Amino acid sequence: MYLNKTQSEPAWHIAALALLILISFFAALGAMPLFDIDEGVFGEATREMMISKNYITTYLNGVLRFDKPILIYWLQLASVKLFGLDEFALRLPSALAGTAWATSIFLFVRKESGSRQAFLATAIMVLSLQIMVIAKAAMADGVLNCFLAITMLALLHYYKTGTKQVLYLAFAAAGLGMLTKGPIALIIPFVVTFLFSLLEGTVKQWLRMICNPIGIVIFLVIALPWYLLEYRDQGMAFIAGFFFKHNVSRFSSVLEGHSGSIFYYIPVLIFGMMPFTALFFSIFFKLKILLTDTTNKFLFIWFAFVFIFFTISGTKLHHYIIYGYTPLFILMARTLPLMKFPERLAVFPLILLGALTLLPLSLPIALRTINDLQIQALLHGAMDLTGQTYLIVVTTTIAGMVIILLLPRLSNDYKLIAMGAIFSLFINLYLAPLAGKLIQEPVKEAALLAKKEGYKVVMWKTNNPSFLVYSESLVEKRAPKPGEIVMTTIKQIHKLDHPVILYSKYGMVMAKLR
Image 1 (spheres, rainbow, N blue to C red):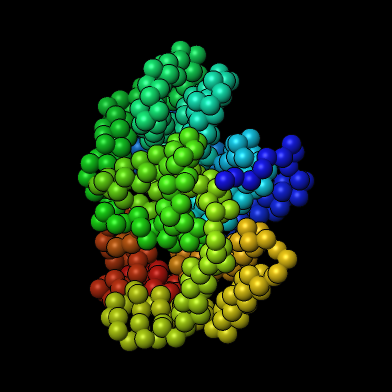
Image 2 (cartoon, rainbow, N blue to C red):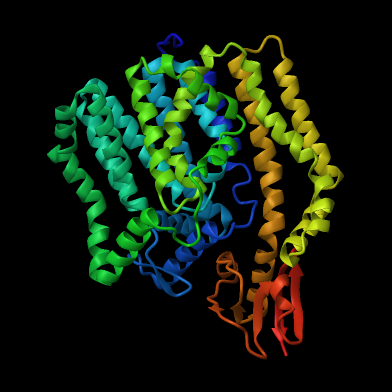
């Protein structure tokens, strides 16, 4: 069923993966403004840590922030100290974590199934749309996914070999995951390995594994000190804010308006797996064959638990499902040799790109039917940015993928990866920067103007924490008073008396009240 193992991987596999990682994770890393809300929040909390020199407790706009543990802020702060406060520095830890994440997949699969399949699994991971986003986003999830992948793959390797060193590696990675995003770094490994051991009849082995005293010490030495220091600094406010609000309440109820139906993650998977969506669905058609293998059982339980857990969770965010993506990439690589018509795998990305060619035609129609001033401003901006150059780039991308598909001497799996590389170049070098120009560039430009002119700004009816990063100042969030400068939206500015516009672009407005 699987490809033959080789003693040593061809050098070009390593070189090709390095190039793909460069394209997907590092190309244009600092070319886009920080995206609100998440990147702005993490960037601002890191900036305030740098100024306050309080390396234990994080603040956002001068207010205590208990959303996430400390490691991502330490990593971003170290990067900012080296490279300066900019988008590249804030995103670099995620890109490096993405590289380590990809490396862990490659090393595990190479040992299991050989170099070719390791290359395919890793390349699929590196070129998948949602991974391209998360591995270059200035937030905690790319780092967490790195440690989670290492934890889970090390535990699976321990199940198969009994090697204590890999078990200790799993405990260490879990400790770092606990420092990155909290209890979820323990919940997923604990439940998945328990379910797997229950299925395999190895519960006693599982108990010995999770109760390993050396492993527990390693975990506690890494994770516990910051939690104790933060509790000493903030007391029960930390327990209530971090554990109860941002962990228990996040699962049991809808937090910050992030709700969704039980089908929420279906479209997320469809788009998140681009351009390999068809290959993802193929797993389920080949599931009976795949589940005859013990490794595949573990991988499928891993994905299924993450999918079910976050489907029933009260709070839903699109990046939560990524915690179950690593096993999918490996299963997709194992499914590919079983495909009878691999050329059909190009259907989903070509449909998406085809729909993007129609965007310039659909924008004027949407503009005539939508009355919201803020959305109208964004649509006008999108019309400005999707002219002739846009159509040339999209159609060239489609043509490149079709040409790759028609090459007679290239194997189907390498055709798939080559098309993924073209798709990645389009997303990273063109589409994502275009989205940044439309959505976030106005916030950045307004903030830089405020910094240059020394404006003290009030933010009203909008939430753009990246404004704080770029202006290097705090803001009050309230209704503005006469004589004050306000950052708001075009939808709200008409509600104010005699505003003097200082900056306006794509629906974002900075004005002074008379």
